[in-house]
Amino acid sequence: MTEASQSTNKPATAEEIAAVITEFEQYRERLLNETMAAAKKAKLPQKTALAQLEPQLAKIDLTLEKLREQKATLTEAN
Picture 1 (cartoon, one colour):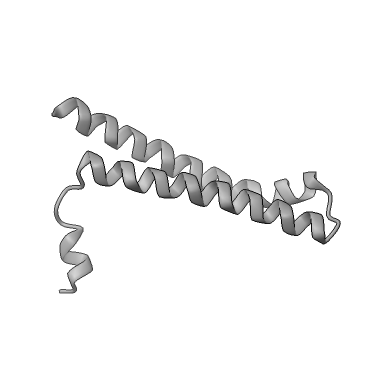
Picture 2 (cartoon, helix red, strand yellow; picture 1 turned 90 degrees about the vertical axis):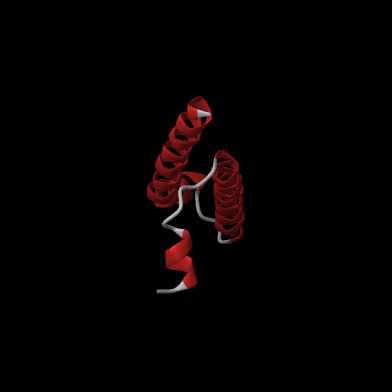
């Protein structure tokens, strides 16, 4: 078994989940900003760029929601 798969067997702490949430939020913001900057350079309409990006943003938002729920559950349990 690899070290990574072994570490997934132990439950994450609220602090670890909070760190992942922060990283995802930063990634989402960076993705949005960089995509919009690239679209502007390519002279693509903002609406077109957002439409292409929306499925990825929706996945990130769903993941963030699930992580926030996990963190809330862990925080309540402690």
